[in-house]
Length: 162
Image 1 (cartoon, rainbow, N blue to C red):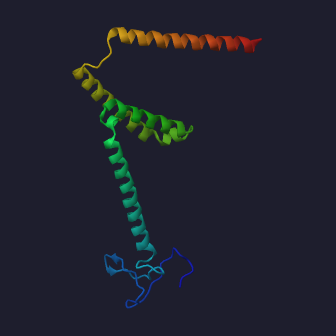
Image 2 (image 1 turned 90 degrees about the vertical axis):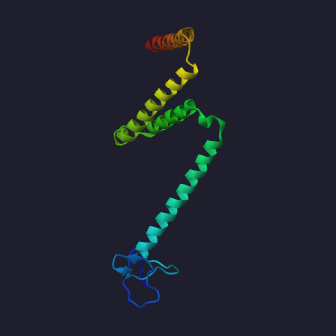
Image 3 (image 1 turned 120 degrees about the vertical axis):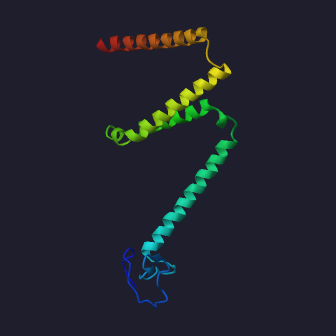
């Protein structure tokens, strides 16, 4: 037997321990791994396939859970999920990882933009948009929060200067 696990070993054509995997030229010419039907090369392909099937099964199970949830059918919820996903990706990135993940980040931003447009069109049709008074009220609350925050920052800075 071969001591190195990852190196395939050629065998005779009539060897009973020959790999059952197929190549373009016929049956694989290497010995099967102990207690397996396939060599190191063909065994890995099968492991990757089974891993893919396992991950695919997990994803399909998660999707069925999402489909069954009452909020899963609203665009606003899906928009929130995309925004949280974007936030998680950006928070995990350091200075150099942002550049590496820029394609993924740009893709999520495009999806958010498209979903936001679809959500706005749907809300216009349904009539769920905020009135002008509601927008002004929200703006005033935001303004008040920013002013309060700035005052606190000024107090802290004046305290530090003493």
